[in-house]
Length: 207
Image 1 (spheres, rainbow, N blue to C red):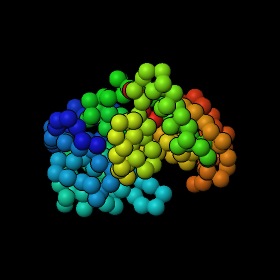
Image 2: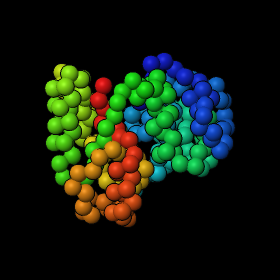
Image 3: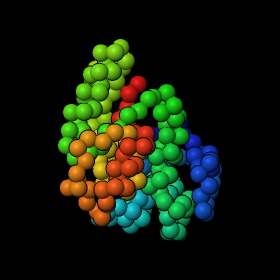
Image 4: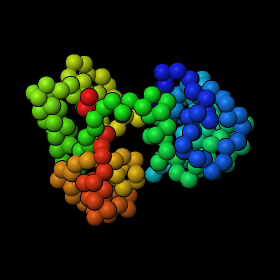
């Protein structure tokens, strides 16, 4: 996520209340990146622990590629600014939104989760919104479609909101479609996932 302009690290973190902040709090941050392969000069690299790999292990390469700050869950002491938080995954969304100028304040959002029919449902909802005179955009696993142009989705683009990311607190969906246990995985259980799927706001953009 690249911002419209560079932001000082302490301004980016305003309201997050990190457990610890080491290094220069006034370093200029130009982007917030979760994939170390996409780090460019001036990036803040978010070290997100995942199911297969831990972002903390990729921090040295991120720094070598130009990262000036790290968002971490444990101290690394690699010579750049570090903001330590209890859960990187929970704060990276709000930080990305701040860096991008809080675009969701001008965008109404709806998320769809489930086992089957997610993509179809998002396009049906987009078509309904378009027929009602609204502009609608659909963010999917392969492409971002604003009904005027279809662009390939990047690796960090939000999918329709799958069941497992819900259980891992990656996404906050607003609708459930054919939710069954085969779509969970990773130790997730049906009831907590179904509950948060129904009551929390989502991430498929409508503007």
